[in-house]
Amino acid sequence: MAKYSKKAGEKVEEALHEQKEGKLKSGSGKKVTSKKQAIAIGLSEARKEGAKVPMKKD
Image (tube, rainbow, N blue to C red; front, top):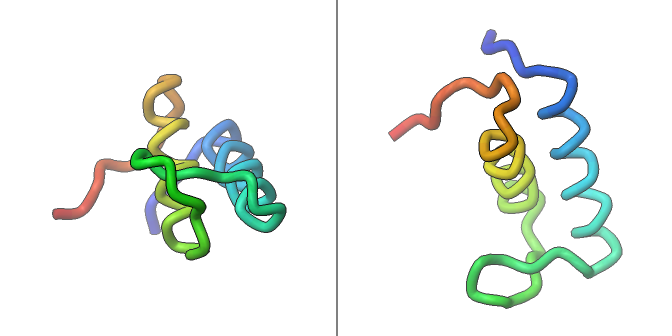
């Protein structure tokens, strides 16, 4: 199983919370409705901040 840092987990939790409230937007500006998409956004943000997140699968 891949190891994620605590910071990455917090970012994903934050993104899921925003998605639940209807405040999370995708890159195109549309509202995010999918949990999978919210998780992906959270991991992407964590990666940008330098958190320990395993590489994306192609």
